[in-house]
Amino acid sequence: MNTVSFSFLFAAMLLATLGVKLWLSARQLRHVAQHRDHVPAQFAQKIPLAAHQKAADYTIAKTQFNMILLVVNTAVLVGFTLLGGLQWLSEQISALAGDGMVYQLGLIIAVMLISSVIDLPFDYYKQFTLEEKFGFNKMKPALFFTDLIKNTLVSALIGLPLIWVILSVMEKAGDLWWLYAWGIWCVFQIFMLAFYQSVIAPLFNKFTPLEDASLQTRIEGLMQRVGFASKGLFVMDGSRRSAHGNAYFSGFGAAKRIVFFDTLLARLAPSEIEAVLAHELGHFKLRHVIQRIAIVFALSLGFLALLGYLKNQLWFYQGLGVTPMLNASNDAMVLILFMLSLPVFTFLLSPLTSIRSRKQEFEADAFAAQHSNAQDLISALVKLYEDNASTLTPDPLHSAFYDSHPPASVRVQRLLTQ
Image 1 (tube, rainbow, N blue to C red):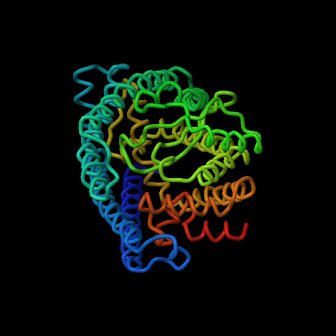
Image 2 (cartoon, helix red, strand yellow):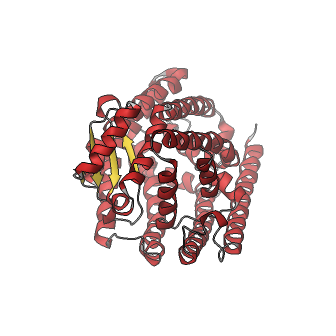
Image 3 (cartoon, rainbow, N blue to C red):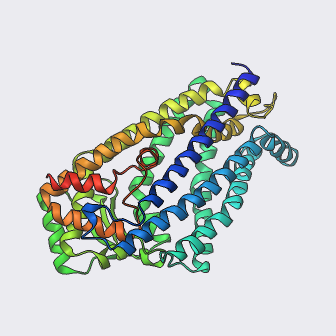
């Protein structure tokens, strides 16, 4: 591979990815609009036409917004790479900070800050215009900016030490640095999975023990039936930010917690909540969580090995608009280039990654039907689709690329046969 060939390959893949994404979005817009005025037959008695139309309008608005964001992000990526933005930024920071670790951390911070500043108006518009229009936004501007500051501080306190360690390993651990870096990253991920819920999440949301005694008894009975031990049942004040609802569990071993959004508890009946939780517990009991972690770890090992190879390839830097420094470390630069370019080469594989995820969703649904009631899960899914304004008629190809869950109609049909 030489510089010109890689530049051409990157540009071709970028244009192909952009073209496919815009084409998929156009398909989604057309398909949802065509089915806007008719509720699918299997949902006709459960979801009003007005709710179905709201879901269609919400999906169309989000898709149009994402198309604009896609074009902007592609332009930013081209600016950083082929148009020399990273090279210019590197020269400016090098002139101020020299060529050591301060330069490397400064380069990564600068790229993250520039990206965040570009994203900020889009995030604000999405929250206070798009989500507000459809009745989902519950957040005030003060909370939006408070979250932004907290996220920035938490990311800095956790991320910068990790980046410093990884950069140090890249510099000092020899040709197998990527293997040591992988071990460090895996330990960090496990640590975050174990302690995020108890340490970081409370910085953003309030978690209180579930007070509904009858619901607690029902849930504890379910956990006993499936053999799931939890440290506690908690309610999260999700309504401070959004009207969307959810439930999840987090942590490992005896530290596992079950968390319900308050919006979910307010909308679903106790039997429906039990069915939703049974689905989530199905992912745990069927070892889906462990399998997903293992797959992520395996993929990260492969990607880090690839990065270990690219780190010493001149064409990789120059093909992306960067002239590597000869007498100083380029580790931060190669990390940035790799993270920016990887999605360009992997997006077209997205349907492959969703196949296993959808299979696991079907398995978790079957588990829930076995340990609770299939009709209750169907009823809960219908309510959640209606409340979250999730379209019942997504374009099949768009869904294959973007949706980790099967379409509602397919899930319900499967559950009816349980």
